[in-house]
Amino acid sequence: MFRRLVHQAQEIFAKRLRPTAAPQANGEHFQELNQSLDEESQRNDILDWSEFEGVFYSELLPKEGGSDKTTRFLLQLVYMLFDYVCKQSSRTNKVLDFHLPHQLLDMMDHCLHVDSEPRDLEQILSDCKETLRYCVRTGHPRFLNQLSSGLDVIGLAGEWLIATVNTNMFTYEVAPVFTLMESEVLERMRRIVGWENGDGIFSPGGAVSNLYGVLTARHYACPDIKEKGLLGMKQMVLFASEQSHFSICRAASILGIGTENLIRISCDYRGKMNVAELEAQVIAAEKAGKLPFFVNATVGTTILGAFDPLPEIADICERHKLWLHVDGAWGGSVLMSSKHRHLLNGICRANSFTWNPHKLLGVPLQCSAFLLREKGHLQSCNAMHADYLFQKDKNYDISYDTGDKAIQCGRHNDIFKFWLMWRAKGEKGFGVHIDRMFELGEYLRSLIKGREGFKFVLEKGECTNVCFWYVPPRLRDMPDGHEKNSELHKVASRIKARMLESGTLMVGYQPMGNLPNFFRVVISNPAVMPCDLDFLVNEIDRLGQLF
Image 1 (cartoon, one colour):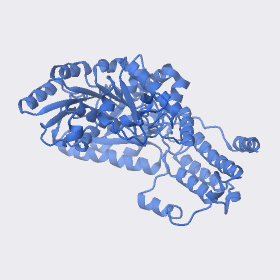
Image 2 (cartoon, rainbow, N blue to C red):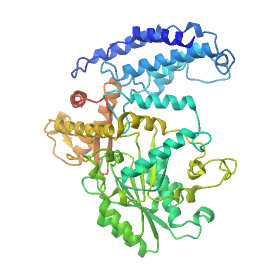
Image 3 (cartoon, helix red, strand yellow):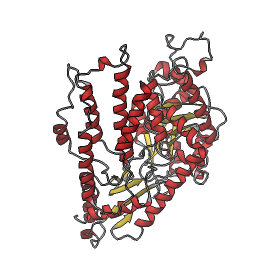
Image 4 (cartoon, rainbow, N blue to C red):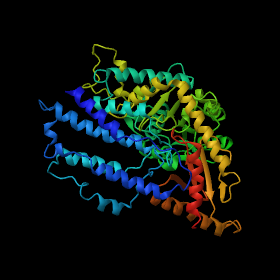
């Protein structure tokens, strides 16, 4: 029965799939995007799910005899997802069908609410279709809005398997294969960093990995805090650059250190930490009777993509006996490239390291690793010895029971998709991807350089971040100064609004310090081609002409 149903599904897929259109030049044509979206909507509207009318979830597995209906239901859902995956990278489709929140609430009013009565499976499939229609196509080659973008098919396959198995990562007995995979991958990652031993854990995102960094450093400096708390302790202080991620400041808040005790170190024009100022601030804190304990260095800052000078920062940490944590959530994956890994020279001297494969390596969200140079710190810091989970007399090596060294209890399986991608690509494949992203970054810089109306925030960036202003015609002859900056500050947000409304492109913007809003393009999406960057520059110019 199952094989017959699968064969039927394959025939349906073959009939419905169409070849992906070749890349089009800018403006060929915006109307085609609207037409494509309308046609897609019409195709989806004629899908026949009538066999599921009046059929409810209670008739699916694990109900005895429910395998046939379960198979048919899941095949319909798989077709829907398969169709979405195949079409989301087509340049004839929009990146998104944008509506303001109140508009989208009205449009989805018929299916958004949850209440006491169940809906049949026909409605459930319709709900899934409606949801996909209004999602942002993050795998679209013109989605350049976030550090994490693109859709890796191997990673997607891994995510599907993870959801099917649906297990917890806290003990070997419930996740035997996955705990071994996690141990193997973390060991390999540490060797790439340059550590022979050490420890690590996968966490729900770089912000939590950075929280692990501050928490572990605090425990290392003052282990009594775990049981006795902060009362009566010296005032602890930590250090991070002005360009560091906000999660370091949040960690100071969460852990009771206080955001005012995070000392921000200035950066040079490239976004790199001022090393001389760092040491001066450490000495000043020591003289004031405070307890410096932690320095955060960043490799791949969020906005400019800067890499802090690790050897010099490590020297200061060693002189003053400070814990060095390196936030490589964005730039850590550069270690996979033999051509660019020099940007992280000195990383082996860090005490801990955040590395997010879900960013530059393209692993599906979420996948973040917290790595440690030395073993034992995580267990000492976090262990609560819950004996209903972490019994000492189990019939296997309990070092594979990782839950007691995590700050979570339930922990999602984030390893399998990464492990599967690593098996499929190897470090060589990851390195090729990194090198290509850097080449695309350089290509975009070459487009912007000398292009009328475009001005770099930083012309020679270190990563794939490309930051620039678009200066509309009316401002180009205005003298530099407060008035021009005030007007320029409004431009990026207005272009972004039109960008969302048209659905042709997604690029982020932000201010930085006293600088007016500027665009930040981050390239990590493997679907991006040079023609997409040509389109980006032309489309921003087109949208900006009105301002």
